Length: 91
Image 1 (cartoon, rainbow, N blue to C red):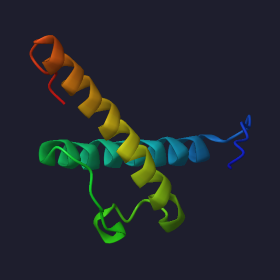
Image 2 (spheres, rainbow, N blue to C red):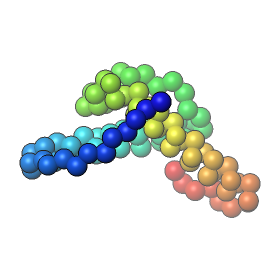
Image 3 (cartoon, rainbow, N blue to C red):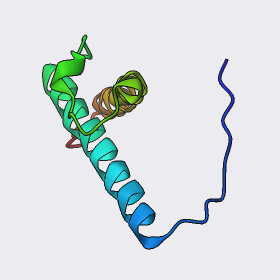
């Protein structure tokens, strides 16, 4: 069980820039790895060494978990579209 805490941070411009940069890198990695998984049509074990070095080692597990959620949703959407007979959405 995890507890999430939402904080309001009073940041200077440099820290805002750093956090925005990290968020951009993090979401970019999710998209990049999800695209690989979708291309293979399944998720598989992805090595930490293949994830960007800009991502903290302790955040890589969470990144992999979030990527698998994104992939599962996209594959389910594609399967539902095929079941209805529509053209599958492009990932």
